Every structure is written in structure tokens, then in C-alpha cells.
Length: 244
Picture 1: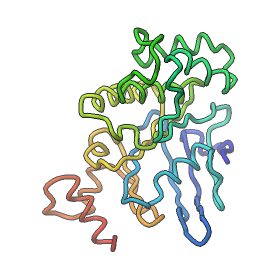
Picture 2: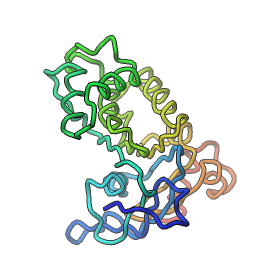
Picture 3: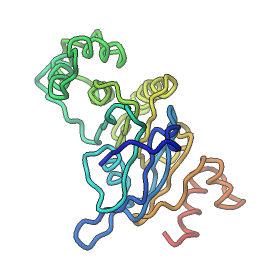
Picture 4: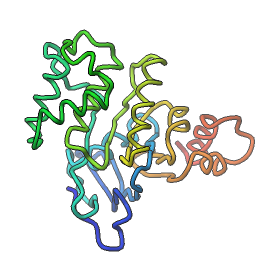
């Protein structure tokens, strides 16, 4: 559950303290702590089952931690959450989907929010088209648009580019990068470590429910030691050195 930050933490957009989550006997997240600055792009990477989705779900407020807390600045808006599975109504148009979710989220002026999101996502010319007829990249843009309806200060994306072709992926990241440039804090999980290196100003490395690294891609390469040819090799070496 998100609460407001203490006075000394007001420069952070997100403060996570000792987040722990268990599903039965399985520990999905173990004592994870970090801070994210306003407008920062942070990649969350790690092997399958590392706890990436669990972490983002807790920060988003859709999953409660068993221990720990997520803090946000006083007066900040609820965080935006975009799960990996696109949750859209295929028989409704782009505008109808946005309008429906704006009303469900009790946005003060749904029509203004729909107009703004069509412009933000670059889908004004597709506003009357059924979502089921859109490409995967455009459906993902609608999905992210729904996450932005309430103008969140922090946007959380779980595998946003999964199943997209290279051109769709490039367009999606141009859109996300513009959001960050305008001050929206973005945290995203990805299995594509090259994507994390390219777009993440910082990376959080999770493995077996533990946060093993928090720093820049360059710092991760240095931590992995010399001899690595690229970021992916450094990432693999880093995990191997720590028994993962």
C-alpha cells in the first residue's frame, strides 16, 4: 500500500522499503529497497521467476506486500499500471476503450482525457477503429494510454514490448521516452537486456526474489569485471558470479 513520504524523501518519486511477498511457502520478493527519482527511466531485469512482476505490482498498489511499504510524495497522483497482458475490449473502438476506462477510474473530465490520450499516443486517426483490428504495437499504445488517463507521476510497465516486432518496439520506446523527458517517472520490466541497456538510465537486477544490483548499465558492466564484450555478457557474468 502506498503512503506519503517523510519530509526528507520528497525528492524521490518512489521509495520502496524492505518489500517482501510470499505465495505460500515460496518467497517471491525478499526485503527489496530502492528509490526512483522524478522523470527517471528504470529497467527491472532478471531471470524468469525473479520477482519482477511481483515488484512492479506491489509498487503499483495492485498487490499488497507481506512486509515493507511503498512511499510517494505528498499530494502525488496514483501510480499508473500497465500489465503485460493487454486488457482491452477488442470490439470497442480506441476512443470507446479510453472513454470506458476514464469513467471507471473516475477521471474528472473523461472526454478531455480521451482527447489528450489520443494525441499522446498518436492514434487520433485510429480513434474510431476497433481495437481488435489494430497492430500489436498500436494496441500496446492504447494500453499505455489507459495507464496514463489519470496523469500519473509514475508509470509502471510490465514487459511493454513483449511480442512486438522491431519497428513497433522502436515506436513504442519513442513514445515512452517522450513521457520520461516530460517528467513522468517510468519503471519497466523486460527480458531483453539490450533494451534495458538502451533505455534504462538505471537497472535493478532481481534473482530468486532478491535485489542484487541497483545502478547504471555501465556500473553493472564494471561490477561484472573486465573481459565482457557487451552488456548482455556482463549481465550473464554478474548472475553467474553470484550463483544464479
